[in-house]
Image (cartoon, protein in one colour):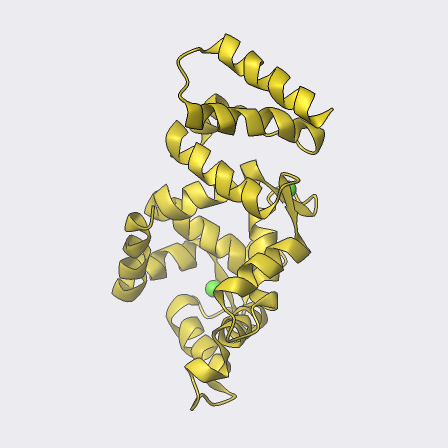
Length: 220
Ligand SMILES: [Ca+2]
Ligand SMILES: [Ca+2]
Ligand SMILES: [Ca+2]
């Protein structure tokens, strides 16, 4: 049955465009197969909605399908994938926050679309787009402002992820100190919360943050 579907979709995609090379064929083929679990938007549509080329989307899709054959990632998968990158620490809390930021339609799973929309902003978005995305990540309850508690939760999760081996001399109150200095810079009107306007304005004036954002430009 599976083989039959595969052959069928392969010949379908060849009928649609005979000029595909073999690599493209197999990716298009995966697209057809994935309808069993989850149907992604067409490549053309995704290309319009993101800043990736069709070729880049195909490479991303292949990697995505490799990690998650069902076509969607739940929070558990996401944490597992993430932990491979940070084996020395506990990345589960940070992965949870990231997952919520990627799952923009809040249905408990990250589809390929969710994934490339987020990635497109992080890697190819304007400075404002990227800062908006980061703000949304830090604004844990998504109410439009970042509290000290939210920032502390994020900071602790980052320190947990980096692990004790990376920072053997780290003090327990390091995250709190980090948050204090963050707030002093960002909470301009001193009302105890950081709004999106305060966040963007402060980040743009901070050379370190600006430089680290430009690093992303060369990743893909
Ligand atoms: Ca989703
Ligand atoms: Ca909030
Ligand atoms: Ca404020």
